[in-house]
Length: 72
Image: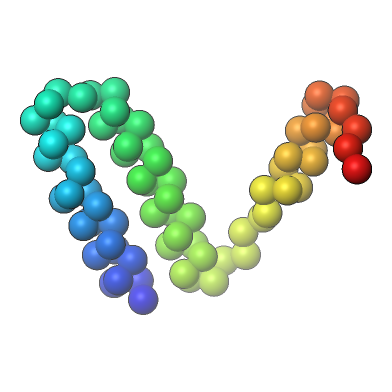
């Protein structure tokens, strides 16, 4: 399963990165790299069975404790 995950991300890199370099879209390449790396890390952790926190807890903390907004 990990091999398929790595192959999928390498395929995405081989498909998108050469055009970004050829057209000199350096900022887009940086954004693509950050998003791809974060997606790869999260996918790898999920594949390995690591329990990941949900985003709803982070949003609740942000809204309730930092921004002092109430929600229902």
